[in-house]
Amino acid sequence: MQSVKTDRLLRVTIGVLLAAFVYVIYLAIHERVVVAGDQAPQFTITADNGRAVSVPNFGGKLLVLNFWASWCGPCIEETPSLTRFAEDFAPKGVVVLGISVDQNDKAYRAFLQKYSPGFLTARDLKVHEDYGTFMYPETYIIDSQGKVLLKIAEAADWTDPKLTQYVSSLL
Image 1 (cartoon, rainbow, N blue to C red):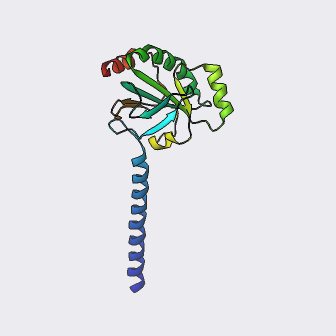
Image 2: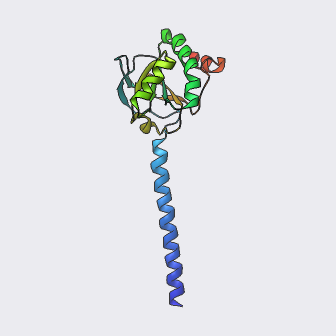
Image 3: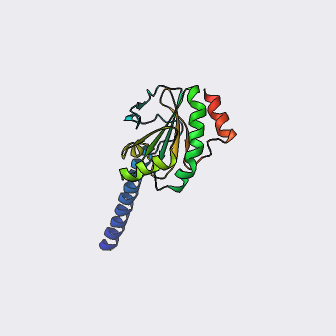
């Protein structure tokens, strides 16, 4: 009789500990994923052209922060429309920064040479982690106070009228 009570107590204890463990892991992961409405994690990075860009002080009305990689097919497809968007919206105070997560500098440089992105680019292996970004491309539209207004967790057509009208409404 005593072993049945001990066995039941042991099972309940293990169940409670397992639930607590899962909850702690959930909180650790959940806190690291940035969504619309959150404050953007602060960083300062030097773009390839030498310009320092930081959140929330990036010198524009909006920051379009795009995480990408040279080996990412959707990133390659997105680059031309993001370039057109950057060229169209730069005079309106929008800063577009593409941060590559490439570990290989040669692959990164080859991508820049081949696709000639018309927006600020940099390579960094840490900033994306602060945003909880591990799938690419992923883009954040951040206002001048550092608040994330929109998160796009897939490739986007940056010439789509819905997207350009949304950005225009923020200016």
